[in-house]
Length: 412
Image (tube, rainbow, N blue to C red; front, side, top):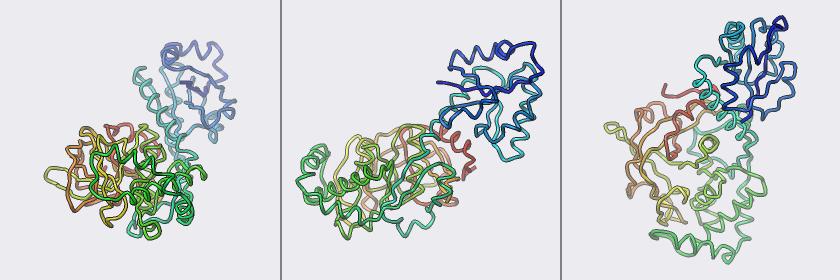
């Protein structure tokens, strides 16, 4: 990893070089990173993909930092040790930056702690850069009942660099009608052969579901989409199928896919993938037990790769098409949701997936989760309906990322 150190040093201090004056901390950092010293006059040469810290090498550089204000990395993270009045200058600069609304942090103290903090900051930086320029296809329009899950497209692009692209359902219908059963027959049979069981659905239902998957994937390739959210219910009238299997397979393909046109949840899936490399399971909280602090989450689709086994079912609400009842592994999980029209709020909890359930009055894939924060959140301050479950405990990593981007924890 290359660590660019934007170096601010007083011109009055000529008795000793920067590297010599700060030999201890710089040599320690060099054991972990490739250091690239960038003179403050050359700050404009750094590009958006260059991970950079501000190195306060001496005192008396406060006005130099002021003059470079427009080109400083955000957040403004400063490295300061106990030499050459480095820390004193960093304290003054930090106060000035914060008074102008710029998030600031000083790295100082034990070298081991500084190295660990730099690694976390680099991880956040990489996640932010991977989100920048991401294209999310909004196929159809959000479901009418998602009254609290809207996103302001412009604010989302300014804050996160994510672009939402509206795509009419007619584009899907054109491709769906053109794709023949023969084109999807072989792959349909392969998916059926791997299923633990088939509870509902006919061969014709399976072929329709696979034609829909093929149609949506072609749109994703043509429009260069990284993710999509689908107006599932609106397409049923034309296709006589649901999008459950299509969304499952798209997630397996690495194209993040969410249900019901939920704009906030698809961003949550993107953020999780950027930070953990994992695909999440988008689901409804369907039953809450405050005494045991457990929630049953359920939905009719889940990526096949997330399951240990899967059963082919029909869509719960309509009884149509092909849905997936996935059996997920028990163990540690994280529940996440980003909310707000500018995606600046979040809920986050670790927990344990205790069991897969099989209630007849819920969507097909069902998991009982014991949370590590109070389930009162869902009843008092919920960020809408859908939440994302990811296997593993990533609370610290996600918390750091959201906090670095000035997001508000809804339960704090």
